[in-house]
Image (tube, rainbow, N blue to C red; front, side, top):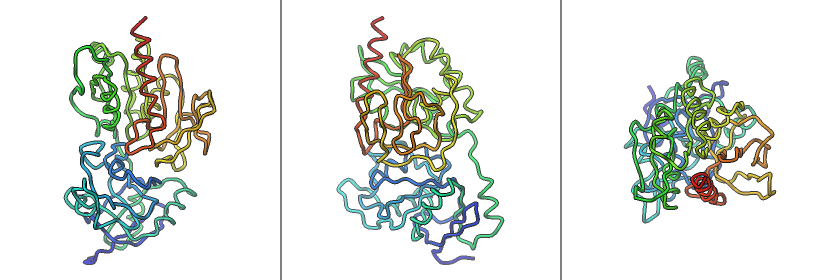
Length: 356
């Protein structure tokens, strides 16, 4: 039995990395994905789009401003584990309430440090995302096989809220219906800050129940997993019904992908996805390039895009007229906010629809 702080990461291809635990100790399995953000780790940890995954931070120094609960994007930590080269044990920030290590220990989250994170990130870039297992014991072939067989069932249902809630309630305000597929708090906050009332619905709410609240528009949130998962069939049918009604729809990240599936497009898995705060996106109509925050592992398959990723030309936006969607996060906390104007654009489309 391992009585030291040694921890091992075994990938499904058999590669083993030896490091050290921080936070909680134990075993866990997940899909390993890397994110390139130098800041924003608090928001990353609480982004429910990471459900079932192990996050690898490519920037080596993480945790220097501690844990700041007001910046959380949800009530709990989303990933199954967290990998950082050098997690900071003595954060310095007047808003900090904990170190990464202390916070992880309180909430039973496994951290892995001291491995060659650059080598692991390069391996994922070259071979594609893969599953891995973190364990205190010397990895065996059965550990590798267990990692390879791992998958997450119906993750959107696991992270969506169970009841209807309202934020920014007030007479005469524009009403936005937000579908919670694992929604980041920043999305609702962005609309509330612009004078809207936001009614947040569970992921499986029928279209008729949404429309009976008379929303001026519907927002489809971010969320975890494969958009084409058969478990999402009910969601896609609901989006089709909303399209048929004519109400303006704004899809963000997973919402963008589900919206595309509802309109007959296909999706496919990217080799290693886009995760970080420095993804360049070009508006194909104006030629302007924006720097965006992203967290996704799938793309919509089409060349008919309103926006494209400058790095790999993947689809970053679709415009349906009254409705539109984007693959990135215009609400990104803590930034960049180059595309925050999209919230005003959607409100304008809501107003145009209401004036008909």
